[in-house]
Length: 581
Image (cartoon, rainbow, N blue to C red; front, side, top):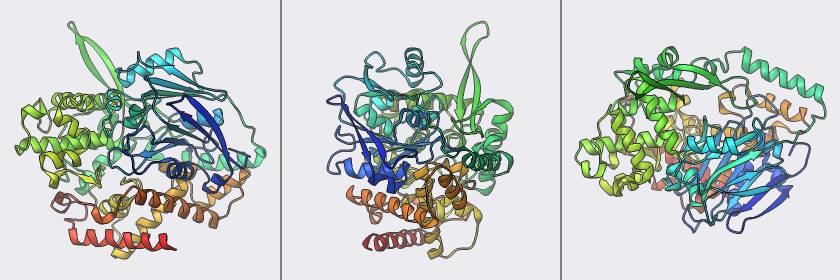
């Protein structure tokens, strides 16, 4: 905690309903955030057990500077992923980081399984185990409404909840945080569902005065001005990440119709600019962020005769426009927003769900599955049928949807079609078909995400690089992001928080730190993650990439599978050599 030499960890045993608090001086070496969470995961995980075994932990942590400076708004969750069987790592904004900070906890570790469905109410003084049996079966929106009416602390409260997908342990079930933010990828919702945890509320009421306020405010103001008065974060507020639709489509790098194409013929209708002109109704921000990147779109739904309509509001961003738009051949903003609403209510990760449906559609077209499996005809552009399929996934409606709920890699193993099941080491792809950077970077990344090392940005820079230079760039960027995520700076602000800014921000609140210290912290966190992956049995040599990556042209043309595998091997050798020293 701020001005303390320890990390305060709240342990909650759901089976015995006992709690304990540990103050760990040794964890200060990891700063906080993903560093602390990684170490706690390594200490508490059971590699020999299933990811959804009740003994496996679910860990939440905030960073060393959480809620103190602008755009340091995230909380990290770490767990064993039921989707990939290895490292699970996800980030969410909203109010959660602030409320954990104000409740006095740097990290929370959940283990065990509640004997009945429950929701946790965490405050500075206590942890209460509330009966959630009346909430079990409710969709995510309904749970949020009930808890907001029941729990005190509005404005100083964060509400996490799962939907039916989490209850049914769908491997890519998400956790909704404060309505518009999520722990989306890799299945934290299934982990909470396996523990009979329907929701978590955190209420914070503690304030910590800043010791040297004059110096702190000077640094705070300089960062605030940088993120609000320069172009560094302008795009995130204006059109938001959906601005990427038009540019990626022009590059031929917009995954379309299960990555059979790199351009979408209807892209102009679903660009960020089109959404802003026709559907955008407001912008929101995570607590402590002056930017406001959360874009809320609205569509009308008729619910009765005589022109009776309701206005439905949902958040949207680029990855949703890709995964539930171009990837499924959806042509209008209203239709995409309807699909977003469905994944929100069911509690599914939009990216994995969209990519899984893309595989299912092509499998249906090729005759690998039929109506008896899919229950509705699947074809690109059929919005209403996709909505039905989303609910079928969340409810594990039959054997096919149970398999699809374990990810499209697993479904393709059962039904065929691995060559077009678009995953990186079992994690469904992100919205960039830009080149070697995104493919190699996502495979080697600790959680197989485009955000591990930003390989897509390396591709888009279109700088001539040797294989060695590409591997080095990916490795160094992943380590740098380990450092940023120990503070849990929103990665949208990574250009605002250069090393000098990070050091100045730390020193202004009493954290004496040097540039070399940040490098050592980054290395330590990265190596901790690599040890976790090794203990869980992951090796890069065993990764199988679908052939479609090497068939569909992207920004940098058609990729060569031999070159891709060569770079993956080079990366593996570099990491192995580091781990031996």
